[in-house]
Length: 331
Figure 1 (cartoon, rainbow, N blue to C red):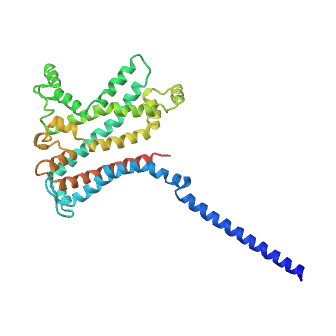
Figure 2: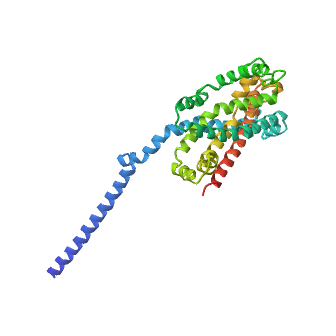
Figure 3: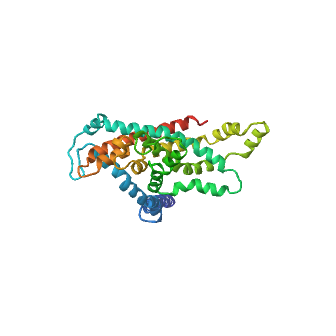
């Protein structure tokens, strides 16, 4: 009985010891987990990425998200620049669709896009192919083509205004060479003013997008051109069969970026045509109309906000279209 009792007490003690050890182990693990999630080093590492992102997120919310939400709210009111407004629902959008000035400005913006975007997709590519050649003095031409990019849009507009006015350099040369019998109304006719603004936009954007294409051309294997030359392909055939397919993704990117820029054009029209947007306001674009409607003592900020959102939707449509075209060309 004594031996059996001793054995029983020993087994009981071992079980109690094992249970105690298991309990202490579980308790230690819970304390360790709590410490990792708490203010210890592991917990701080978990929150570190969010702390680094916080300043950038705050700037995005303050300067992008909040203004956008405020514009949406304003577009649903009849607010003016000197007083608050009351909720009017979709009345501003109905007014825009019935406003001839809105449709004129929208038509000018779309026409601007239809002319400027193809020019800014093709001409900088041709320019990049030319300046990519290593010939004496090519650095000067690269710098000269890029100079308009770093110049202020206002300065560029004033230079072209001096060139295109009735007594400007272009009309003076045309008259001296007897190419025209009277000055060309570059700045006094609504259609010619819009065309002149397009020329300024293309001229200023050539060097900018040329750099994009130079980067893309640097990734084209020279062996492709050498093989095509051995097969008897001329410069034009090499350009169409090798250069264009190789830089097509960049062409899609340039098309998207230039579309957004064309729909946002304002400075060129303002500097060349003045505050009225040309004779009778015939060269006004959507950004120009937004400024006219939203400023002044009686500025209709609610209506201007509605036009701004319609411009945003138009820009979004063309951006998504460009993205869809880019995806369609992927293998």
